[in-house]
Length: 310
Image 1 (cartoon, rainbow, N blue to C red):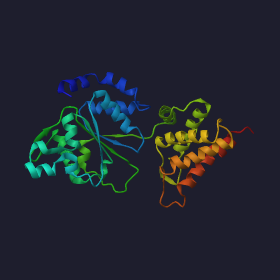
Image 2: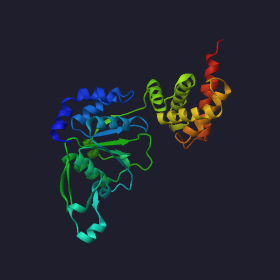
Image 3: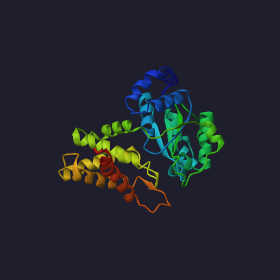
């Protein structure tokens, strides 16, 4: 993407927002703030649990701008060489070091293509790797030995994400890293937005499908409030729960969202879709299946009794 096109992007940010919003459910505020920051030429840190539409948001923006979105997983193996690139060893032996046998890493690719470099689990990356990123963010250029200086196109951005609920294997980011990044907290969406997401992703319809969407979102959201759970499931759990439950309904010939057959298949689908997605507190004596049973009973036994007349 040329600089002229980039300037055009910045001038028409309002028009772009309207088109991007059609691809993102229930993230109007987050879209507006993220789009404003990246259109202003800033790098971003999106802080929130998995399954909160961070990737969807960035995908929609980059598709609208016509630029690539390059994914990198932050972990202890993400060395500066893996991020920047390396010289092809076999060609080095035959031809010596040259620019032609340099294999670009995701950082160089993003800079040269003017794309977004999206680093998930940013706080798991080694410190020397983060320092390499600091140079790219500060100078919009890096120097690669035996290759030379690589300048970033105007639409190049570094977008980082972190999960505030997961501290295992993470490191505290330095002040210099925080100083280079704009930050936006991205939390779970409300129930209505999550139901619309599940409906969009599953195509569930009719009386049975609509009730499955409602129940799937309700029990999934309940995993985030359970006192024995330190991290519940994202909306991805509700999507899978709905999909699995629909298949179970077909296998068991359940056509009505009423009765024990329906509530039973929802519980079985919960075990499959949610038990691996919830993280029970280490001090708890419960296992995920017990937590899900409690949530299921609240939804299908206690709530109907409370709502019954008399």
